[in-house]
Length: 199
Image (cartoon, rainbow, N blue to C red; front, side, top):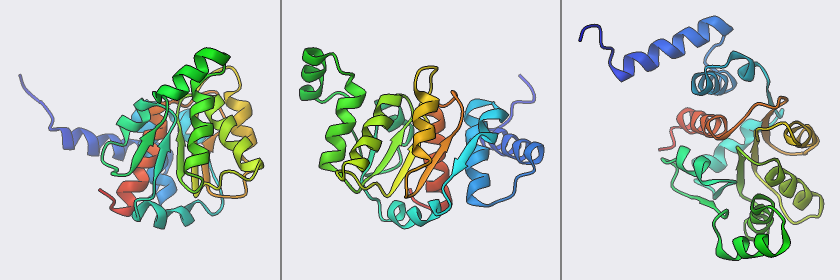
């Protein structure tokens, strides 16, 4: 076979193409947008990202390897190089309670996570109900996240919950679209880690 590119060359070419296509530079925002577009091959989702005015205030917490909570294991796997992370979705007590009540595991697991880790970093890439649980816990004075990456995907409640996140008086990254997902959530956090040299 001929003209086989090295992985690093594919990566660099892809990033260069995205930056040129979207007129991006080297700021953290631009790095996040670049990685999200690269992870999804979707320019529109890159354009839909929204950052709180103070989101970069969360960088010291990531450099300090603050506890990260994810809504599902796919996001957990996607940030494999971060050392201090946890997901409650397969917690046995959560599974039993969900079975007995009919309430989603995503909602219940995030409620428990908020109680046990009130000042953590939260990454939501799948379930709108997980983001709803965080926002309710914040409203009730139970949870005080240092950063919320809230990009759940779907046609039911995803856009609504992300719109609610805009009212959070703290650090967040989201997108106003039905699009999102685990790859998007992981790409955002990995971009921040790379920018902060956290590996």
